[in-house]
Image 1 (cartoon, helix red, strand yellow):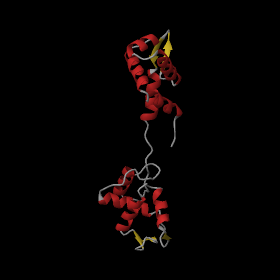
Image 2: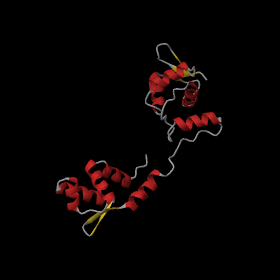
Image 3: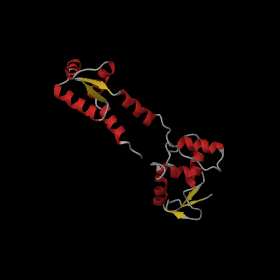
Image 4: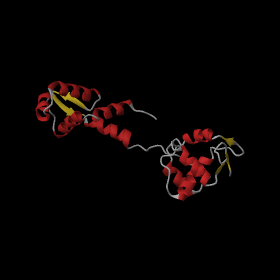
Length: 182
């Protein structure tokens, strides 16, 4: 995951209720430190700490003893981080349009499963996708099957059962050996 330290600082700044109250006050009009203490009924020491932190991360700035929101900074961060297109999974070009649509809807950009679909037709598309991780004519232990499936989703038992129920994987009755059928 590509982390943006600047955005993380802003989110940390916005994660405190008192800092949000200060920001809310400053959205109406600039205010001095004493105005903030009086209007929000907060201790001076806390207000000083909150203002210093908000100023450090660029949410606000001080002009002549008045604190003002740095609206340009906030708008720029919003444009940069929230308006851009999110990466998505790109299915193989040889797939049919319906399968491509299902894979785009249910897979993360890294190919892991965002959500296992409930609808049988969509689930079959996901299971066909998972089946590609298993080599034909190869025997797998249950542990190996779980290890492969864990790359895609945490519910390895459910996916394993779905693959067996769909006759894509076969298994010994005791679960000691799995193999790809198709």
